[in-house]
Amino acid sequence: MARLTLAFRSPGENFDKWQAAFAALMPDLSFVHWRDVSDPGAVDAVMCWLPPEGWLASFPKLRLVQSLGAGVDHVLKDGRYPAHVPLVRLVDPAMTRAMTDFVTFQVMRLHLGEPTYRRQQQVGLWEPHVPLRTVDRRVGILGLGELGTATAAALVRIGFDVAGWSRTPKDLPQVTCFSGEAGFAPFLARSDILVCLLPLTSATEGILSAATFAQMPQGAGLINVGRGGHLVEADLLAALDSGQLSEAVLDVFQTEPLPEAHPFWTHSRIVVTPHVAAVTNPATASLVVADNLRRLQAGEGWPDRVDLASGY
Image (tube, rainbow, N blue to C red; front, side, top):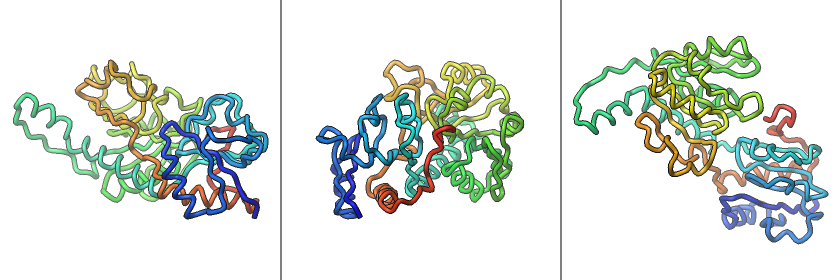
Protein backbone atom coordinates (compact mmCIF):
# COMPACT_ATOMS: atom_id res chain seq x y z
CA MET A 1 0.00 0.00 0.00
CA ALA A 2 1.09 3.59 -0.62
CA ARG A 3 2.88 5.38 2.21
CA LEU A 4 0.64 7.84 4.02
CA THR A 5 1.50 11.25 5.41
CA LEU A 6 -0.42 12.26 8.55
CA ALA A 7 -0.17 15.83 9.85
CA PHE A 8 -0.77 16.50 13.55
CA ARG A 9 -2.06 19.68 15.19
CA SER A 10 -3.28 20.15 18.76
CA PRO A 11 -2.87 22.86 21.42
CA GLY A 12 -2.16 20.05 23.90
CA GLU A 13 0.74 18.80 21.76
CA ASN A 14 1.82 15.29 23.02
CA PHE A 15 3.48 14.92 19.63
CA ASP A 16 6.29 12.74 20.97
CA LYS A 17 3.86 10.26 22.55
CA TRP A 18 1.83 9.98 19.35
CA GLN A 19 5.01 9.63 17.30
CA ALA A 20 6.25 6.74 19.46
CA ALA A 21 2.87 5.00 19.27
CA PHE A 22 2.65 5.26 15.47
CA ALA A 23 6.28 4.15 15.06
CA ALA A 24 5.29 0.85 16.64
CA LEU A 25 1.92 0.49 14.91
CA MET A 26 2.62 1.85 11.41
CA PRO A 27 6.37 2.06 10.74
CA ASP A 28 5.75 3.25 7.17
CA LEU A 29 3.60 6.18 8.25
CA SER A 30 5.07 9.65 7.77
CA PHE A 31 3.84 11.43 10.93
CA VAL A 32 4.53 15.16 10.75
CA HIS A 33 4.02 18.05 13.15
CA TRP A 34 2.02 20.80 11.46
CA ARG A 35 4.93 23.26 11.77
CA ASP A 36 7.14 20.85 9.82
CA VAL A 37 4.84 20.34 6.83
CA SER A 38 6.97 21.42 3.87
CA ASP A 39 4.66 20.22 1.09
CA PRO A 40 0.91 20.60 1.83
CA GLY A 41 0.16 18.61 -1.33
CA ALA A 42 1.79 15.53 0.20
CA VAL A 43 -0.54 15.38 3.22
CA ASP A 44 -3.10 12.57 3.00
CA ALA A 45 -4.69 12.85 6.44
CA VAL A 46 -4.84 15.21 9.38
CA MET A 47 -5.31 14.46 13.08
CA CYS A 48 -6.28 17.60 14.97
CA TRP A 49 -7.98 19.46 17.79
CA LEU A 50 -9.15 23.06 17.34
CA PRO A 51 -7.68 23.62 13.87
CA PRO A 52 -7.59 27.31 12.90
CA GLU A 53 -9.91 28.67 10.24
CA GLY A 54 -8.84 27.58 6.75
CA TRP A 55 -5.98 25.35 7.85
CA LEU A 56 -7.59 22.12 6.66
CA ALA A 57 -8.44 23.70 3.30
CA SER A 58 -4.72 24.37 2.76
CA PHE A 59 -4.10 20.69 1.97
CA PRO A 60 -5.15 20.14 -1.68
CA LYS A 61 -5.05 16.32 -1.57
CA LEU A 62 -6.46 15.78 1.91
CA ARG A 63 -8.48 12.54 2.15
CA LEU A 64 -9.28 12.19 5.86
CA VAL A 65 -9.67 14.38 8.95
CA GLN A 66 -9.40 12.53 12.25
CA SER A 67 -10.78 14.34 15.29
CA LEU A 68 -8.67 14.06 18.43
CA GLY A 69 -11.84 13.74 20.50
CA ALA A 70 -15.28 12.18 20.44
CA GLY A 71 -16.77 15.58 19.59
CA VAL A 72 -16.22 17.30 16.25
CA ASP A 73 -17.65 20.78 16.86
CA HIS A 74 -14.09 22.09 17.24
CA VAL A 75 -13.47 21.06 13.62
CA LEU A 76 -16.80 22.05 12.10
CA LYS A 77 -16.63 25.59 13.47
CA ASP A 78 -14.22 26.15 10.56
CA GLY A 79 -16.40 27.83 7.95
CA ARG A 80 -13.93 26.74 5.26
CA TYR A 81 -13.98 23.04 6.10
CA PRO A 82 -13.50 21.08 2.82
CA ALA A 83 -16.88 19.35 2.61
CA HIS A 84 -15.63 16.58 0.30
CA VAL A 85 -13.17 15.32 2.93
CA PRO A 86 -14.46 12.64 5.36
CA LEU A 87 -14.38 13.60 9.04
CA VAL A 88 -14.09 10.80 11.62
CA ARG A 89 -14.82 10.94 15.34
CA LEU A 90 -12.43 9.33 17.81
CA VAL A 91 -14.25 6.41 19.42
CA ASP A 92 -11.75 4.86 21.82
CA PRO A 93 -13.06 2.22 24.27
CA ALA A 94 -10.62 3.53 26.89
CA MET A 95 -12.11 7.02 26.59
CA THR A 96 -15.62 5.59 26.80
CA ARG A 97 -14.68 3.79 30.02
CA ALA A 98 -13.12 6.98 31.40
CA MET A 99 -16.32 8.91 30.71
CA THR A 100 -18.54 6.30 32.33
CA ASP A 101 -16.26 6.24 35.39
CA PHE A 102 -16.32 10.02 35.69
CA VAL A 103 -20.08 10.36 35.31
CA THR A 104 -20.78 7.43 37.63
CA PHE A 105 -18.59 8.98 40.31
CA GLN A 106 -20.29 12.37 39.99
CA VAL A 107 -23.80 10.84 39.98
CA MET A 108 -22.93 8.93 43.14
CA ARG A 109 -21.61 12.11 44.79
CA LEU A 110 -24.88 13.89 44.14
CA HIS A 111 -26.99 10.85 44.99
CA LEU A 112 -25.32 10.36 48.40
CA GLY A 113 -25.37 14.08 49.26
CA GLU A 114 -21.60 14.57 49.41
CA PRO A 115 -21.81 18.28 48.45
CA THR A 116 -24.22 18.89 51.34
CA TYR A 117 -21.90 17.23 53.84
CA ARG A 118 -18.96 19.22 52.50
CA ARG A 119 -20.84 22.47 53.13
CA GLN A 120 -21.91 21.26 56.58
CA GLN A 121 -18.31 20.44 57.45
CA GLN A 122 -17.25 23.98 56.64
CA VAL A 123 -19.60 25.34 59.33
CA GLY A 124 -19.24 22.46 61.79
CA LEU A 125 -22.78 21.17 61.33
CA TRP A 126 -23.55 17.54 62.25
CA GLU A 127 -26.79 16.72 60.43
CA PRO A 128 -27.35 13.25 58.92
CA HIS A 129 -29.48 12.86 55.77
CA VAL A 130 -30.93 9.56 54.59
CA PRO A 131 -30.40 9.20 50.81
CA LEU A 132 -32.92 7.69 48.44
CA ARG A 133 -32.39 4.13 47.28
CA THR A 134 -30.68 4.03 43.92
CA VAL A 135 -33.82 2.50 42.40
CA ASP A 136 -35.73 5.61 43.50
CA ARG A 137 -33.20 8.08 42.03
CA ARG A 138 -34.08 9.03 38.47
CA VAL A 139 -31.07 9.82 36.27
CA GLY A 140 -31.54 11.33 32.82
CA ILE A 141 -28.93 10.99 30.08
CA LEU A 142 -29.20 13.76 27.49
CA GLY A 143 -27.71 12.23 24.34
CA LEU A 144 -27.59 8.49 23.58
CA GLY A 145 -24.59 8.22 21.31
CA GLU A 146 -21.54 6.08 22.05
CA LEU A 147 -20.79 7.77 25.37
CA GLY A 148 -24.38 8.26 26.46
CA THR A 149 -25.32 4.65 25.79
CA ALA A 150 -22.32 3.32 27.74
CA THR A 151 -22.98 5.71 30.63
CA ALA A 152 -26.65 4.74 30.80
CA ALA A 153 -25.72 1.05 30.93
CA ALA A 154 -23.21 1.66 33.73
CA LEU A 155 -25.79 3.50 35.83
CA VAL A 156 -28.40 0.78 35.21
CA ARG A 157 -25.94 -1.80 36.55
CA ILE A 158 -25.64 0.18 39.79
CA GLY A 159 -29.40 0.19 40.15
CA PHE A 160 -30.49 3.71 39.18
CA ASP A 161 -33.76 4.42 37.39
CA VAL A 162 -32.27 5.60 34.09
CA ALA A 163 -33.88 7.41 31.19
CA GLY A 164 -32.33 8.80 28.03
CA TRP A 165 -33.24 11.37 25.43
CA SER A 166 -32.06 11.49 21.83
CA ARG A 167 -33.06 13.28 18.64
CA THR A 168 -34.22 10.03 17.04
CA PRO A 169 -35.79 7.00 18.77
CA LYS A 170 -33.52 4.54 20.57
CA ASP A 171 -34.20 1.27 22.35
CA LEU A 172 -31.78 0.41 25.17
CA PRO A 173 -32.06 -2.40 27.74
CA GLN A 174 -33.59 -1.20 31.05
CA VAL A 175 -33.45 2.45 29.95
CA THR A 176 -36.64 4.47 29.47
CA CYS A 177 -36.03 6.15 26.12
CA PHE A 178 -37.51 9.46 24.98
CA SER A 179 -36.90 11.18 21.67
CA GLY A 180 -37.62 14.29 19.67
CA GLU A 181 -39.36 17.47 20.71
CA ALA A 182 -42.39 15.61 22.08
CA GLY A 183 -40.25 13.52 24.40
CA PHE A 184 -38.12 16.32 25.81
CA ALA A 185 -40.47 17.68 28.51
CA PRO A 186 -41.48 14.28 29.97
CA PHE A 187 -37.81 13.26 29.98
CA LEU A 188 -36.83 16.39 31.93
CA ALA A 189 -39.73 15.99 34.36
CA ARG A 190 -38.27 12.69 35.58
CA SER A 191 -34.57 13.70 35.71
CA ASP A 192 -33.50 14.14 39.34
CA ILE A 193 -29.93 14.20 38.04
CA LEU A 194 -29.43 15.31 34.44
CA VAL A 195 -26.26 14.32 32.56
CA CYS A 196 -25.52 16.15 29.30
CA LEU A 197 -23.60 14.06 26.76
CA LEU A 198 -24.93 15.66 23.60
CA PRO A 199 -22.84 16.66 20.61
CA LEU A 200 -22.68 20.43 20.18
CA THR A 201 -24.62 21.49 17.08
CA SER A 202 -26.74 24.47 16.12
CA ALA A 203 -29.74 22.52 17.43
CA THR A 204 -28.22 21.76 20.85
CA GLU A 205 -26.37 25.00 21.57
CA GLY A 206 -27.80 26.59 24.73
CA ILE A 207 -30.04 23.60 25.48
CA LEU A 208 -29.16 23.77 29.19
CA SER A 209 -31.17 26.92 29.78
CA ALA A 210 -33.74 28.41 32.15
CA ALA A 211 -36.54 26.82 30.10
CA THR A 212 -34.93 23.40 30.50
CA PHE A 213 -34.19 23.79 34.20
CA ALA A 214 -37.79 24.90 34.88
CA GLN A 215 -39.09 21.58 33.56
CA MET A 216 -36.88 19.51 35.87
CA PRO A 217 -37.85 18.48 39.42
CA GLN A 218 -37.08 21.19 41.96
CA GLY A 219 -33.71 20.59 43.55
CA ALA A 220 -32.38 18.49 40.64
CA GLY A 221 -28.68 18.17 39.91
CA LEU A 222 -26.83 18.84 36.65
CA ILE A 223 -23.69 17.23 35.23
CA ASN A 224 -22.38 18.74 32.00
CA VAL A 225 -19.71 16.70 30.25
CA GLY A 226 -20.87 17.61 26.74
CA ARG A 227 -19.64 21.03 25.68
CA GLY A 228 -19.58 24.45 27.29
CA GLY A 229 -21.77 25.74 24.47
CA HIS A 230 -24.66 23.62 25.74
CA LEU A 231 -24.95 25.71 28.89
CA VAL A 232 -26.41 29.19 29.33
CA GLU A 233 -24.18 30.17 32.22
CA ALA A 234 -26.32 32.98 33.66
CA ASP A 235 -29.36 30.68 33.66
CA LEU A 236 -27.49 28.06 35.67
CA LEU A 237 -26.45 30.59 38.30
CA ALA A 238 -30.03 31.83 38.59
CA ALA A 239 -31.40 28.27 38.86
CA LEU A 240 -28.92 27.38 41.62
CA ASP A 241 -29.53 30.57 43.55
CA SER A 242 -33.32 30.09 43.38
CA GLY A 243 -33.14 26.44 44.46
CA GLN A 244 -34.60 25.11 41.20
CA LEU A 245 -31.32 23.22 40.84
CA SER A 246 -29.36 22.05 43.88
CA GLU A 247 -25.93 21.21 42.46
CA ALA A 248 -23.95 21.37 39.23
CA VAL A 249 -20.84 19.53 38.07
CA LEU A 250 -19.19 21.22 35.10
CA ASP A 251 -16.31 19.72 33.14
CA VAL A 252 -16.69 21.87 29.99
CA PHE A 253 -17.02 25.63 29.55
CA GLN A 254 -17.70 28.40 27.05
CA THR A 255 -14.13 29.63 27.55
CA GLU A 256 -11.35 27.20 28.41
CA PRO A 257 -9.38 27.52 30.60
CA LEU A 258 -12.11 28.99 32.79
CA PRO A 259 -11.19 32.65 33.49
CA GLU A 260 -9.85 33.35 37.00
CA ALA A 261 -12.63 35.79 37.87
CA HIS A 262 -15.47 33.54 36.69
CA PRO A 263 -18.20 33.07 39.34
CA PHE A 264 -18.22 29.30 38.81
CA TRP A 265 -14.92 29.01 40.69
CA THR A 266 -16.33 30.19 44.01
CA HIS A 267 -19.98 29.12 43.84
CA SER A 268 -20.71 26.75 46.73
CA ARG A 269 -23.00 24.55 44.61
CA ILE A 270 -20.76 24.15 41.56
CA VAL A 271 -17.91 21.68 41.10
CA VAL A 272 -15.43 22.68 38.38
CA THR A 273 -13.16 20.14 36.68
CA PRO A 274 -10.80 21.14 33.83
CA HIS A 275 -12.21 19.16 30.86
CA VAL A 276 -10.86 15.85 32.15
CA ALA A 277 -13.88 13.52 32.01
CA ALA A 278 -12.43 11.60 29.05
CA VAL A 279 -8.92 12.70 28.09
CA THR A 280 -7.45 11.40 24.84
CA ASN A 281 -4.64 8.94 25.58
CA PRO A 282 -2.16 8.36 22.71
CA ALA A 283 -1.41 4.83 23.95
CA THR A 284 -4.97 3.65 23.29
CA ALA A 285 -6.31 6.21 20.82
CA SER A 286 -3.43 5.51 18.40
CA LEU A 287 -4.85 2.00 17.89
CA VAL A 288 -8.13 3.52 16.71
CA VAL A 289 -6.45 6.10 14.48
CA ALA A 290 -4.16 3.48 12.96
CA ASP A 291 -7.19 1.37 12.05
CA ASN A 292 -8.83 4.40 10.42
CA LEU A 293 -5.67 5.08 8.43
CA ARG A 294 -5.53 1.48 7.23
CA ARG A 295 -9.14 1.84 6.11
CA LEU A 296 -8.08 4.90 4.12
CA GLN A 297 -5.32 2.91 2.46
CA ALA A 298 -7.70 0.07 1.65
CA GLY A 299 -10.41 2.35 0.30
CA GLU A 300 -12.85 1.27 3.01
CA GLY A 301 -15.39 3.37 4.92
CA TRP A 302 -15.36 4.37 8.58
CA PRO A 303 -18.03 3.30 11.11
CA ASP A 304 -17.55 6.58 13.01
CA ARG A 305 -17.68 8.93 10.03
CA VAL A 306 -19.47 12.19 10.80
CA ASP A 307 -22.57 13.29 8.92
CA LEU A 308 -21.50 16.85 8.13
CA ALA A 309 -25.12 17.95 7.71
CA SER A 310 -26.13 16.94 11.24
CA GLY A 311 -22.77 17.73 12.84
CA TYR A 312 -22.22 14.31 14.45
